[in-house]
Amino acid sequence: MNASPELSFEDMLRIRLEVLRREHRDLDEAIAAIEAGGRGDQLMLRRLKKQKLALKDQIVKIEDQLIPDIIA
Image (cartoon, rainbow, N blue to C red; front, side, top):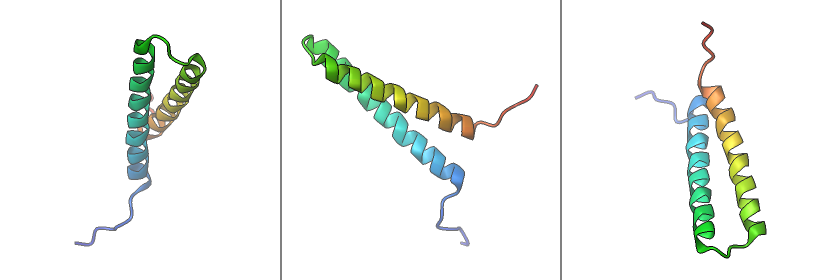
């Protein structure tokens, strides 16, 4: 059992990716709940949507790092 207790860079990226996906999903649910309520705070709704978009950008960036470029 010579396994290193340290995570590889790729493992850290995968963990971070999962955390970001969870946060993105949670924001999506929060936005849906506010919109379903009808009279939600529009400023808060815009901020949540902006935050969700920023998370999506981070997710795509990490996915690009994890998926190697394949030149056909």
